[in-house]
Image 1 (tube, rainbow, N blue to C red):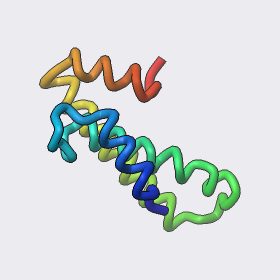
Image 2 (cartoon, rainbow, N blue to C red; image 1 turned 30 degrees about the horizontal axis):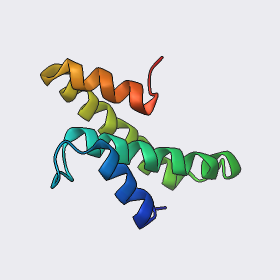
Image 3 (tube, helix red, strand yellow; image 1 turned 90 degrees about the vertical axis):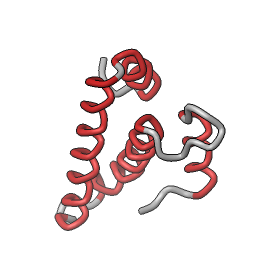
Length: 89
């Protein structure tokens, strides 16, 4: 299930670093987080949907790799993003 266009635009506007930014690390992580949170209720209702779970695992791994890259290159932006998204406590 894809995010709705208006939700996706709001996420991009909130996390972009410049006016034309649509693909920075922060934006990509925020979009993946939105998709993951959108899919979570589906998996609570459909526990046997193994094919979609594979896609979810790929999204989680991609987000993990992007966060590792961001932490390695700019830990200040990493900390800010983690706090905004509420990923780690």
